[in-house]
Length: 218
Image 1: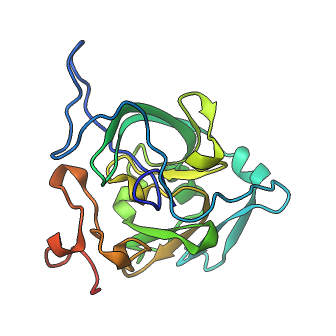
Image 2: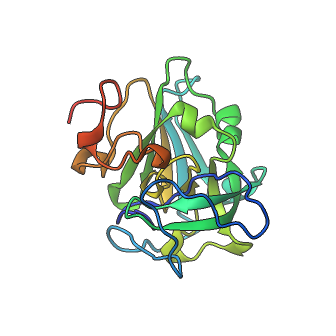
């Protein structure tokens, strides 16, 4: 579920630009006047008393972890400023996201050594898969704020994934679970024709562009 492809929302980090210089965009992208809001399905209603975040799958301990909203809010915070690259070809430069760094999740709730990918789950069963290396990259975080304001419901309140290296559908809104995987598995839009990896600098938009080894069979 997202600001990107009717399903999640994300962004991709861009290098610093010279003063007055236009941001460098990945191929095929343009800058819109405002940030569009696109998502699949209804906007979930948040209830802090019943909401939880699960860490499951191939955890190092073998156990599933459930964090309350208070538990998540108490985790150390970080931030990243990055460009938001939607597969539908718009890019919004320099969005500042703040929240829990994915590295904090990996440190406190480590995956098993055999883990290669992570499935990010949202309300209503929406999901997106990413490589463990993308999850562990500096700048990837579980965001609670955008541009110094708490996320709005339409933008993923209370928690959304932000994966700066990938197209925005990989940055799932309304996150409810992080599942560690020992083998790759396609998420919601990846099963419906979108590229399994989603690197905007390589224009990895659709599954028919995949090369050998870039995704499991459809």
